[in-house]
Length: 196
Image 1 (cartoon, rainbow, N blue to C red):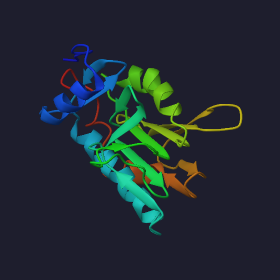
Image 2: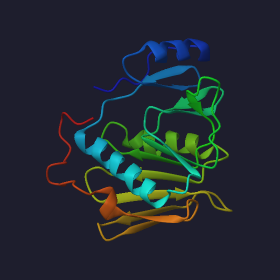
Image 3: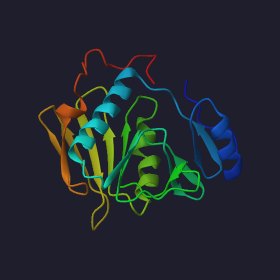
Image 4: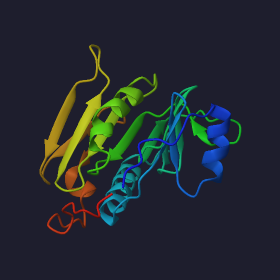
C-alpha cells in the first residue's frame, strides 16, 4: 500500500515527527510523505553501488551516506535518497542530521516509486546547487539512467546490460553495471503484488 501524504506540518513539526517515527518520512512544502519499505534486491543493489564507488574513491576526499541520511533540498524540502556521495567536506547542520551538499544521489526504482523518482523528485534533486549526478537504478533489469549536470541542463543517458559501464566524470571514475548487479538474479527479482 502506498500512502501519498499524511498532513500539513511545519518544518519543526516534521523534524520532531520524523525523529519519533518508526519509518522515514520525506517533507515537501508542508506535506509529509511516508517512505515505503524495500525489497532484498533493492537493499543488495544499494550496497553494491556503495561498495563499488567506495573501492574506486578511496582517497578520503569522498564521503558516502546510506538512505539514513536526510538531504536538505531547500528550507521546505527534505528527501531521503537511497545513496548519496559528497566530494569534499560534507555540509551538515548542527546535529549532523541534514546534508546540504551532495555531489551524487542515487535511487533504486520500485513499482511504487518509479514515477516520483523520474518526475518531481528528479526535479527536486537537480535544484540542489552542489549536485552533479542523479542515478536511477532499475532493480528488475540491468539498466541505469544517469542525469548529469551540463552547461545546457541535465541530459539523461541510459546504460543497459551487464557489460555497460556508467562514466562518472564528476567523481573521476566509472561504474560497471556488472558491479551494481553483482549477485542479483533477475528472474527472481521480478516485481510482484508484494513489491515495495
